[in-house]
Length: 173
Image (cartoon, rainbow, N blue to C red; front, side, top):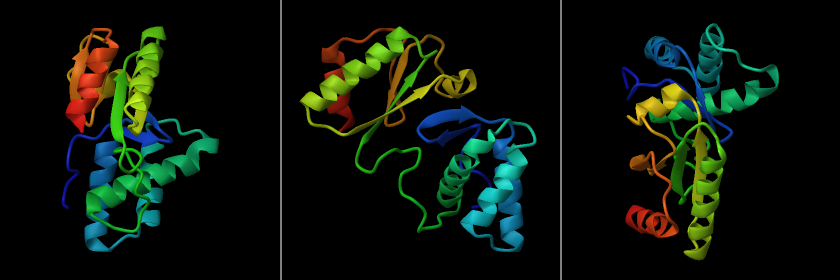
């Protein structure tokens, strides 16, 4: 792949979406280096971490988590196999649900409701909270809370009912 497959400005680090300035540019630079000399996922992740650390604060205790997330990103962008299969798409086989918002009580209540409905239907779900305004803007959301299931926006600016959540989950299967 010559360029990143989509606009990138966030990364899933241990289930949290982290906004990163310059991620797309860093990835393009490392992909360019990869074309000249094939890089391993470890080497590419290290180069990416070094590049994004210039414009972003990466806590020392989280560096390994960032490296893991960057390896997964690298594997997805290059088609490399053999890298962990739990990435931004979540736990294998689970519906990926993103709750977009400030992390307020409404967001937490929506998460609890989704978990209750999913448990009742015996569905595996991977819920991620997205609080970064830039990451939320990627979905075109102006009003929160919002719910995204498998990268499809299903609700914005409304508090859903359990029946609505059940319908969304059924549609996502």
